[in-house]
Amino acid sequence: MKTRDEVTPGGYRPRRDAFWFARSRAYTVFVLRELTSVFVAWTVVFLLLLVDAVLGGSLPEFAALAARPWMIALNVLALAATCFHAITFLNLAPRATVVRLDGYRLPAWLIQGGNHSLWLAVSAVVAFFVLRGFQ
Image 1 (cartoon, helix red, strand yellow):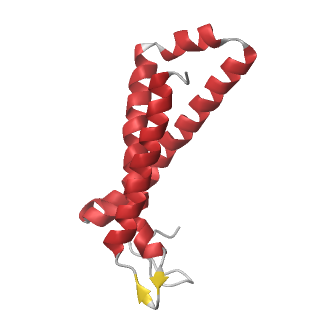
Image 2 (cartoon, rainbow, N blue to C red; image 1 turned 120 degrees about the vertical axis):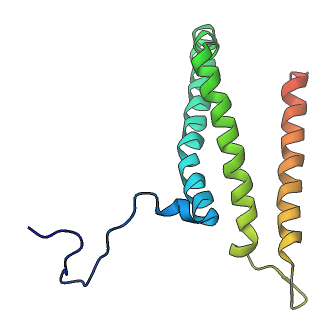
């Protein structure tokens, strides 16, 4: 029986450390960002359950579920993870998008600043309507 350190038809494959990503801050942030996708998915599921409760007339039962301490803790954790996910995504945008005006490439800080400013503006508008109660 071959071990992972033996020569295989594809060549030598050294044993991989289980915490390879912890050696570099960039790799750690990358892995954390990928793991926050689970919490982003939970946020989508939770919002779909809310929409189903509103449309199905079972809002009091959903509100009772959402008021449980473990559910509040999970949603606070999901909010923090989703914010981290969004911030790191917006910080990567200048590397993935090249914007040119009159042949000159826009600097990364300008693209990042625009992304973060738009995110803040949209969040403020949503918060205004949610806190105001759509009156």
